[in-house]
Length: 196
Image (cartoon, rainbow, N blue to C red):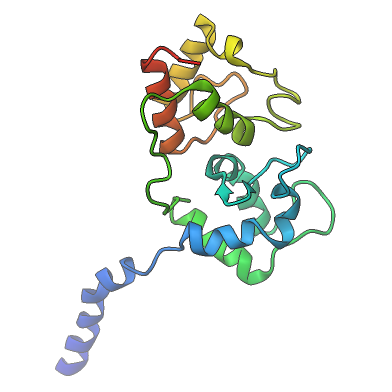
């Protein structure tokens, strides 16, 4: 009986092993799913109704992150948000579900390095084109934003509030998901006087 008690009690000493199970890699496990098969329309580089998740060798993490609730519903028994018979395999759903459950982090390194001051045309426009434009977002239901609209006093306040809250406040269309990379680029751009 004493041996059984020692054996059972030793099981609880291995919690660290359970907690340190490998995390799902966004770049090596999730990205291949997101850029292939079921998500093909989101990766063709053509301006269409589908929000782009990648183009060439660039992965648009913010665009994927902003649709996280749609992915979550889909992999937990829902269907493709755009309709049709598009679906992930059971294994792909498990990978995406686990990635979301683990915090939906991007494990890329150096992805948001900006050399010098961020500029509207070089740094802000690509984020806007991949994360903000779409049929249900800016350019569709929401207003088209350009440099002049981004830099109005009211929009500067809204941008500052959005970046300081991580997207949970300030966006007129409701909360949005923003990566730390996007937040840091926008904060630097605003702090530098929003150079064009």
